[in-house]
Image 1 (cartoon, rainbow, N blue to C red):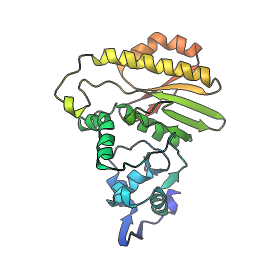
Image 2 (image 1 turned 180 degrees about the vertical axis):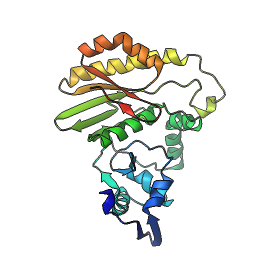
Image 3 (image 1 turned 90 degrees about the vertical axis):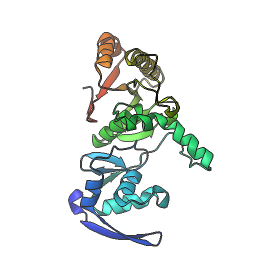
Image 4 (image 1 turned 90 degrees about the horizontal axis):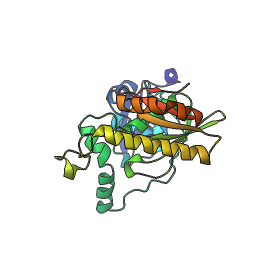
Length: 259
């Protein structure tokens, strides 16, 4: 499909005329970290992005000025592969006031603060890398929880052929607080200790899913850290008996799936 698109397109949006080249899209997104994919995705080189994010970065047009179908149409016209429908578990409501916007920003402070420090292992980034890898591997994303707002339920549900996977996603703890109001403080709990708690939570969630949905693949997705590897080694035989898989996400965003 990538070879069938045009090298550049011209279009009018909200009365303004634009020109967008395929090479410009690739260049502008080259070093961009993809957000979590929710409904529509586009592949730029080997990376999948939400179409809204890709079109906004490529054009400089605020996402409040267009809808996802507009972004899909223009990116597809340039020959980029688009995919959908990827749906969130619950509708995402637009903030209706300045106060609501501030609340949403605070709820996303975990990923924002970590991004400033260059951390790749936040839960949001691990989830984004996982979804990108799943879509690229032929999976359809049934639902994606908003980890930034601590949305309850299964973090990612994906299907392929006759398989459905429910995936519990965890990040790796930071040494500093994500809350900007506590930016100068150091956490009392060591990351390795907190990682043990998070691992236990993930195993419990996977076991509960195994009981509720025995026909599904029950999966835990973790950033590839030695602490998590050690915890996995201690529990691998029990997880195998329970038919719980562990998938590893590395710093480059690659996902190492279980056989």
